Image (tube, rainbow, N blue to C red):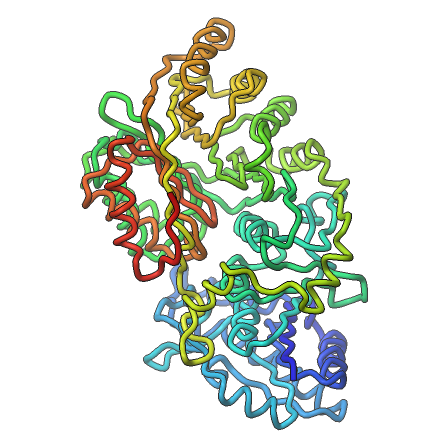
Length: 605
């Protein structure tokens, strides 16, 4: 008998009428011959109310006590939901995270799931009960209540689906699916019939608003199909599933993440181990770093910029200042009023000019770019908070995301839903790498899909770039017109009205690109151009790279221990790219393979 895990968010259970409606959905699903697990969030704004109560007493509540407090919201919801099902003539049992057997690590307010012991859940399902589960919570080895962080009920739901395979996970929410951007911010957003795990990971991690990124990581790792739909109507929703089965759109969606702070450590000594010191100290605070940008060094120093969530800002600044002093850097600067705009698409890697088009769109809107980072399927920029909504709307329109083409989706979805598409080899490998003899083990373990080396690139840096709208558009527009493909792009945080842009091109285009920059320099304000002709790009790709705060720390540690210096860095939800000198590529690859041997399932040359 199939297991269906239904998750209902806070707005879906905000009052007793909505609780009855949700209970009816579960009751109907069971009547169709399914075993049903409901994962329920706290009612409405209950969690916000509890946070406010704590804030009235203290500005720094102990994390353990916050977990004790916040976990009560879900206990109210599951008890009421169970009562509603009983009233309908059904059988239901409400369970806390501890009663469900959800074991987590010890990080209060940000715990990760280690395992789920499913015996009690399966026994109740086999006896005909609907299991009503507290989302967002678990218990650690000391028996302490832990919570998974904001959005953690999504993670609970997909984790339970993974532990109870074969299963399906349905996310009931206040929107009727996954959109090309948050429809509450852009009314012309289009709804996906289907979207890939990898695209959804990037969108969820960048503020798309529908799903918690850790839940998508678990879905991708275990091949769990996720269906997102409205709690309040019967409109078709959106499927999230394996990357190989979804269309390769150049740009599939756009996202706005407001809750960002930019931190820059200036004049970091350009030597192996400097980045390690910075990110190891931040990792010890259990802070997830988002964008990381390191540009090419000048005069033996470089700047390292990165973004974190506002809630992690105090811990991050404290750690960064300690690290700056320890390595002899020039100091720490920060900016709170920034937002990240990103475009995402599986087909971006095969479509030149996406970044240039994004830069031109923002320039035409007179929006200045504060930072840039790119990866194979994503381009992200940092802009001021005041320009955030305008930037999102401009980008969404420029890529015609309001005219999403879903041709063929119905046929693909029908084939997928009937099971005609077998799991691909990579998904099978992931299941083997993260499963154990017990159901649900290692549910949030990081998994490295590949460590690859691209030896055919060159690195170019433009210094003293005017920190004003339009410059990136002009430079990369000219490069695109010359049919030169650009891979990585990073723009670091500017100072005194100037910034630096570093990017990589194929080595065969190196001389032509440098000559072009020298040609257009007089009319564009391009500053000094420096370069490294013989470089290699080392790419670490996998699941959980951002949510596991120690990954960047481990990466920089292993390269520092191997005495490999990093010339350029950029990051995404699923990939970390570093540029090293060509002669150090093999040393870097071996160091990373050894460091991540415990979680690595593939190596590519």
